[in-house]
Image (cartoon, rainbow, N blue to C red; front, side, top):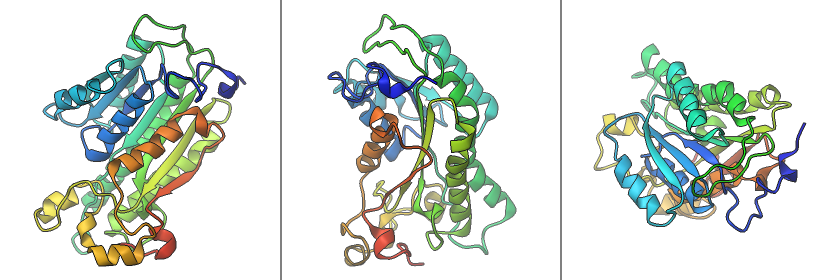
Length: 302
């Protein structure tokens, strides 16, 4: 099996960027964490990023313009896409291969909090949580690797580079709720555990492909949702629990770094996992929670 670490084209030490020439997919790309991941991948030389979101009316143009201002050679394509659909996943992969001949990075950043209470959680709510929080990672694991193993000569477009060995990285952005209980409600906890199960089962699935799969489990990330300003329905549709569930005093007491995280701090870890700097990392769960789960496993008291 070819070793991607021995190819100059996937070397993270390239002077033109550790992701130079890569073609990437980012789901949830119009949400705060997804936006930050798109910006991170572009900053390190990606040739193309499919910025995927579930609605055709999402602000794709705003995202494209923002990336173009600091990474003009990275082509960002706003792409309406249902990550819980098998058919839509296959269509997206076909579009990527037909246009670029390669796929290198797939970042799955989706999330649905659901109700914080089991009394208000019915079977449909539980199914919806599993579908949103775990199914996209499953489809990425099932279908992206075959595209990632394809090699191609360098194209005639900005940031083009040959791909002479199979290479791929699947990054699943989930929550620390996948590692213990007590974070938001039961449906969020159970479905986050399932997302982490996709990553762990994926190691054996991907043997012999040169494709890696890893998880980022995020703690309190400030995505701009105000507990006081948002209704419960809006909160339940969110990706992460609002950081205002805890006041500043509680954050200083229970988080090692004494504050909530920022979307770009999740994105930097995604950039590491996407690149050759993590070439011997697969099946891992990288916790981005400021040390909260070490300080106190119940980071969100209910």
